[in-house]
Image (tube, rainbow, N blue to C red):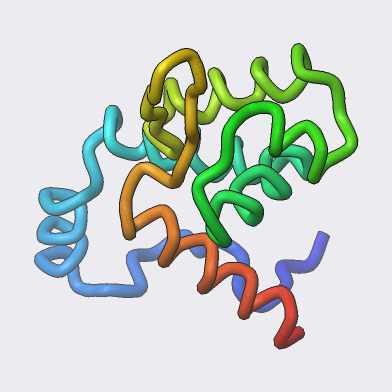
Length: 120
């Protein structure tokens, strides 16, 4: 079977020292797993819609159910998933719980990926 361009070769294409440096500076396993979890969370259209809504403004669970036309149980489940990954945070005011994006990094990632998708 013929090799296609870009397939693995038998010899090192880069100098061994640069590969050693790359290997030494490689992302740690735990960090890679956490990053993969964030991208996995973005792999669900419902969670993407929740994040998009929260990008616009802080919302309570009831408001999110209205915007997404979903049941409270389903929305709460998704919010818990996102909160466990530190994508969203909550703030309690009396009996009402408000949700927002956890920090500007989440906003930046989301906005950049949205631009990427709309560009292509």
